[in-house]
Image 1 (cartoon, rainbow, N blue to C red):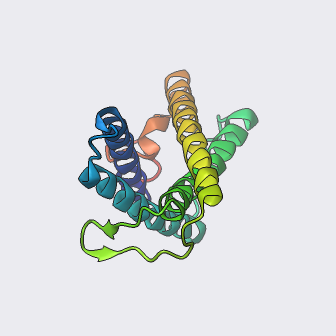
Image 2: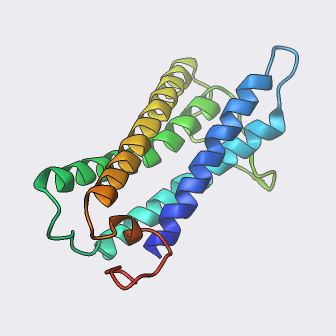
Length: 177
């Protein structure tokens, strides 16, 4: 389950970045790609609840022990990145919600039903949400890059097939499968 949460979250976040680049790349004063914005906003709501479910699952099902060969620095770095990633996975969609709804841009969840507006129009709140949303976008890229770099470093510097902890590939040396 943890592996499924991990990879589904990664794929959806990657999709979000692709959609964001496209929608801001094609949006002009004359053309507003409403469907792309609706998909992006809806996916953000979905990702918020996925992150909450993932965090709940993680609290109820701790990770397996770290390999004995792992250094204290690596353990602390992974812990820091885990906290950082969970934080941005919660803050980013919340700030997007604030940015959008406080900006007066309500929407229907994938066109199915309206997302409740708990804020009302508030330009200052919308601006704060906008900047937090943008800052968390940079943070998530940095955290993911650091996460991947640390995994690859650990995997190639050790003989314990570390990368298999979150892959679906089974081997004789994979402590999870």
